[in-house]
Each structure stands twice: as C-alpha cells, then as structure tokens.
Image (cartoon, rainbow, N blue to C red; front, top):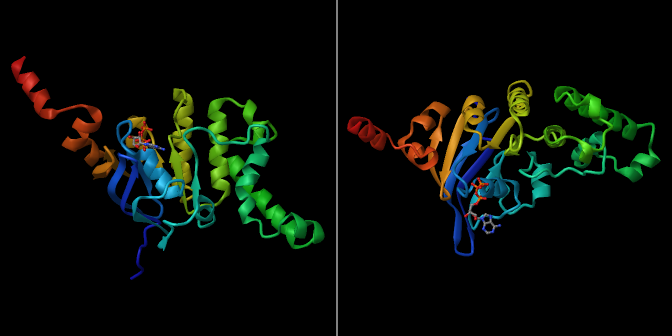
Length: 269
Ligand SMILES: Nc1ncnc2c1ncn2[C@@H]1O[C@H](COP(=O)(O)OP(=O)(O)OP(=O)(O)O)[C@@H](O)[C@H]1O
C-alpha cells in the first residue's frame, strides 16, 4: 500500500521571544489536499506558527518538515523553491508595478533561463519557457477573475482586489502548500464571500493544500476540513470543525462560553 505522507509536519515546535513563550511544543500534520485552519484568541501564537513554517522565524526547539524534508534550518526563499507559498496579513505587493508583473515575480524562481541566457537564445528554449509561464499566469488570472485589472498598477487597486492579486502571486509559485495569513482581514462581506469561494475552489478544483489563519469564525468553520486551536501558544484542540466547536476547552478559551455557567445561569433564572 502507498504511504500517504503529510505535506507539512510540525513537530514539538516551541518559540520564545525573551521571556515571552509564543509557542510551546506544538505538533500537527497537514495532508495533501487538505484545507486546514489555525484559530485562537489574539496573541495565541497563530502568526508565530505561520512564520515558523515559512521560515521567517526559527523555532527555539522542534522541527518543521515539508514534503518529508526537514526545512527547519532553511531560509524562506529556499522553502519557497521547495514548494511553500504564502500570503501576508499586511499586503506585500509591489505597489508601483502592474498586476501582471506582480504575478510574474512569483514565478521568477521557476525560470530556468535567466535574463542573460534568455537574451542569447531568444527564439528557442527561453521563448518556449516564457510562453509556458505566460500561459500559467493567464490560468491564474482567469481563475481569480482579475483579467480586467491585469495592467493596473497594484497600489491603486481597492483592498479586496489587492488581496486577490497577492493570492495570485502566491499561486504563481506553483506551491505544494499555501499559507494564508488572514485572507479576509479588512474585507467587507461581499469581498469575504468572494475570497472564501476562491479558497475553496483553489483547494477543491486545483487540489491545493491550504493552511489558513483567519479570525472570521463563520468562514473558518464553513470552509475548513480540519481546525487546530491555539491558546497561549499551546494546542488545545484539533479536529473537524464541528468537533472543535463542541469542545468545552475551546468554548471557554476562544469563544468565552462556559456550558456550566450557562446551565447555572439558566437554572437560576
Ligand atoms: N517579534 C516578536 N517579538 C516579541 N514578541 C512577539 C513577536 N511576535 C509575537 N510575539 C508575541 O508572541 C505571542 C504570540 O503572538 P502572535 O502574533 O503569534 O499571536 P496571534 O495568535 O497571531 O495573534 P493575533 O491574532 O493578534 O494576530 C504574543 O504574546 C506576542 O506578543
């Protein structure tokens, strides 16, 4: 039987900033094709965890494995070449560049022929490669329905569209897993619904493995296949959305609902 290897394995990851323990021995795995969300109250360690996975932070202890390979000591750029894509909580687009150029930047490391060889051998391999890249980028543009703004300067676009362009750029890397840091933050309801649909399609139609941090609980519970809950840097629950919602510790820690208190309140009334 074929072994199903997780795309992402996080093993006993701890992270400290001076006296602050941002993460304490957190372990979890994400399988190919999953849409996995990390939730928790403010300061629970969600962004710290995403940064440990992407390589922006290095865990004080513990390991991070990508497609079975230990990447703990590798830089974010090397992790990107190994199939890790990400978007940021605060947008990280090149504001002065066009939408198309922003997306092409995402594909830069995939270009085998660089500018010099491309100039020398234009008309052969480099040209074919360039065309293949353009086609891939066009697929992404079609998928995210941003064809009408391809030439627009990224910095001039409304926030919701800039978030979509950022997703396009992350997709352009052709990652085996994509990390989404609060993809709906700052969006209105309509923009949120659109983004949720793109994420679900990305997962279901493109088969992309997704790890998402998101504060909007409704969206998280609607679209995630599995959810992990952090509190004070520790994992307090992991499972199907319904299981997590029903978990007593989660209700108290995250939602501020205590069933015992509720029952006591009802019987006193
Ligand atoms: N660069 C840093 N330097 C010092 N402390 C940090 C740093 N980054 C995070 N922390 C601390 O680590 C803890 C976890 O923070 P983190 O931002 O990971 O939580 P979070 O769950 O993402 O919070 P939020 O939902 O508010 O974004 C917090 O106590 C935070 O103050």
